Length: 444
Ligand code: GDP
Image 1: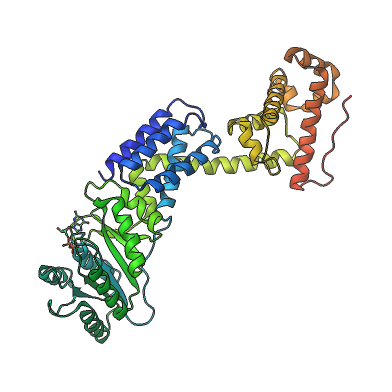
Image 2: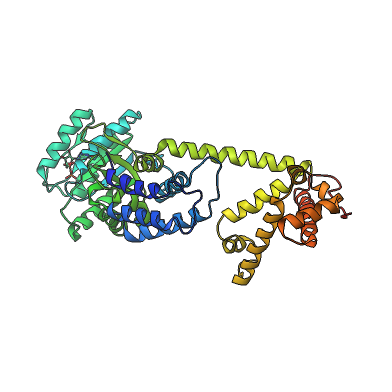
């Protein structure tokens, strides 16, 4: 299975959260360590891993609770979303020239699968209804030219080949002329690969690029080389300027480092991936599908997405209804304060409120204490009292009972009741939905 090791490394992160009720700063420490280790073992570049882990941690702590969704499932979703972003988000399509043939220049080190990709790409574009021509430019490996001619026949695409005695730039020029004469839609040029980057190789590529003025310059990299692939993309981009990468051999036991590092490290997208030796095994690089494969949890992801949607909708409708009918009661009050508490430590929540960036520990303790006091009083209310705060506004006897049962003062109970009505008014005003707004009743 592709990226199998990465997948199982991440699994241990989810497993640690089984039985937890909510994601907290504390309980994500170990899972985040697992994620970090899994990514490093997959040969993702270290700065990328660091940024990734930090982003995911920040989101995990602030995520809140979704009804019916377990914390481990929430973390899967967060990791998935961030993986997609890491890989560039959207699929990055090939660009086509609007006038004259689209020219695609392929570069890459030896053995990465460049010649194979040339023919695969021709077939891929042919299936989209485009006429193609291949140019054999790997003059240092005679076998490569023969190989391309054979593959060209196999996919039924003409190959322009003039042997190994002509300079690549000259081959490019002649090939392009031929393509224009034949009026083909797309020209794909295969170039020489070396075992390592050297100056001659770069200079030749620059010459070829100048002659072709290509629409796309794609670096073919081998997924098995992990983060080295990302470094190569960066180097080639700086040296000759490229438009993207093609990642080959994703079907092998590559660990995922290349797929996850290329975009983030080089700024250039992976446009296509090779997933086998057959001519048909080339496809667009879909970051979301790739993340899905890495996590191997497609069902969990769609479940969490649905739950998120449902909750957003229900909450919005619910709140709207409550505000319209001025029914915001102590149950809602409790729900809200608890939700706030669940979102993490008070300091974090207060820090999110504009103008409250700097809260002192004393203020935090104060806020937490008053939250506890409110909860204690609401807990001893009868269901009717919770649903109809008016009962409490009207009856000093009820307020006295609540004070006694919760161990708070009558003044504190009165304060809480007043607070609730103030909240109703504030919410109404916030929505501007009701004429006249509400008013805070005087307690009798
Ligand atoms: P070049 O030197 O870059 O032109 O590399 P070649 O095109 O000759 O490919 C080198 C080897 O890699 C060949 O045996 C190909 O069949 C193999 N290859 C290329 N792409 C893939 C791929 O996506 N998956 C697998 N499994 N093998 C591939």
